[in-house]
Image (cartoon, rainbow, N blue to C red; front, side, top):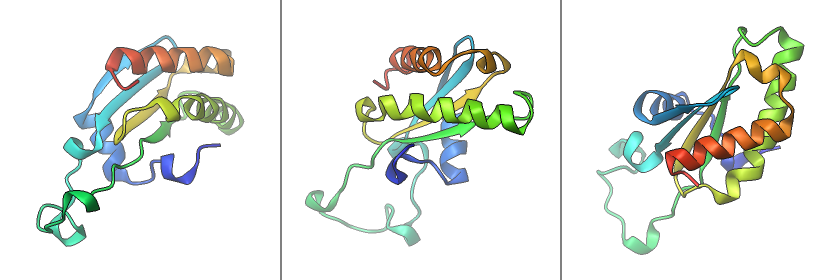
Length: 133
């Protein structure tokens, strides 16, 4: 299970990673990566550029991971099984991710046949290629 601080829940973050980031495809997954500080600016009303803060007050954001497992992967039982394997794979690499990284893992149909270790290896390979590890 991913800790709450590493879970991506905002549609803005998903869009930033998928549309504004870089991606790499592997056999069973596609990995999208963006930097949170560059990809999704925070409006002034939420403490963004309109707010002046000292360097001591700036907290480096934790990396966040989101999953996309569509109906193309299979029925609900299959999708949930794939999502569990992907969450385990993501949990194994979150400690090594760059601070502020937004990572979206999109499952492909081939992910149904892979075990958690194979998915973790593909994820690690993709993140290394994108420079997020």
